[in-house]
Image (tube, rainbow, N blue to C red; front, side, top):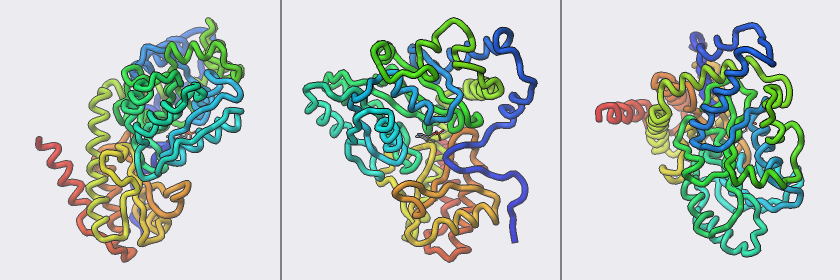
Length: 394
Ligand SMILES: *Cc1c(COP(=O)(O)O)cnc(C)c1O
C-alpha cells in the first residue's frame, strides 16, 4: 500500500526544491553570449551576489557545483606547499581539506567533533602558537551538512583577528547562504563561496565565490592559479571571460529568478523562516528522542543548523525509515553520510520550503517510527506545530 502520490516532497539537504518560477525561467531559447540580455543578467547577478554575501568585494560565477567553488577559493589565493588549517566539524570540512591536499597544499586539521561547533578558542590558541605565520589560510564551513553543525563564523573571525594572524579566512556557505545570517565583511571573511542548489533554490551547476581586497592581493602571487578558475581572467572586459567560455545561460536565468524571489521575501525574512522551520523540526526530534531510539547528532541546541537537522537512530535501521517515508508517503529525507553514514537521518529544511512541507515530512517520519515499531516519544508533530503556534502568536 502506498500514499505516495501527489506532489513529491524533497526534504534532503541539497539539492533542494526548485520553485516553479525558477524552472519556468529556464524554459526559453538560448541567447547570444556576446550581446543582448545575458550581459545584463551577468552584471546584475554579480552585483546582487554582493548583497547576499554582504560584501563590497568581487564576486565570481562558475559553471560548476560547490566543489568548484572550493577549488576556485584555494587555487586563486594560495601557492604549492602553503599550509592551510581546516576546522573539523564534519565531512564537508574534511573533504575541502582533502581537496587542498590533492592540489598541493599542506593541510593541518584543527581537531574537532562532528557533534560540536568549532571552538573559537581552540582556533585562537592554534594561531597564536603559529608565530612564524606558516598557516596561510583558515578554512571553515558555516554549516556542515553531514553533521548538522552550524559554526559561529563571526566568533571564528574574531578569534583570528584577536591573534593578529595574517592567514586568509575562507568560509564555505554552501548549506547556509540564504538560510542563516552571513556577513562576509563584518565577520572578517576574506573568501566566501556557495553553490546554487541549496538555500539559493536554483538547479545544481553554479558556484559563487566572493573575494575581498586581502584575497585579491594574495591572488597576485598565488601560483596554484589555472585558467578556468582564474579571477584575473574572469575580470577581463569580454563577457565570455566571466565564465571562461560559454555562460551557463539557462542556469543564469534560473538564478536571476531565484534572487528576485529571495529579495522579494527579504533576506532577514528568509532567515527567520528557516529559523522557525528548523525550530519546529527540532521540537519534533526532541519529542521523539524521549523514547530513546533517536537522538540529535549535534549536542547543543545553539550549534544546530537552521538548514538541516541530523538525527542518529541507534534504535533502528535508518534506511528502513527513509524507505518508508519515500515509498509509502512520498517524502524523500536524507540518510547520514561520512563517519556516521547509515546510522541516522538528515532532514533538509532549506531553500524553498514552507510550514506544511516541514510538518508533512515530520508527519511521515512520525508514522514511520510507529509503523516500524520504534520506541519514540509520541507527539512530535504536535510539538512542531505547538512550536510554530507559539512563534506565530508572539
Ligand atoms: C553540498 C555541500 C558541498 C558540496 O557541494 P557540491 O555542489 O555537491 O559540490 C560542500 N559544502 C557544503 C557545506 C555542502 O553542504
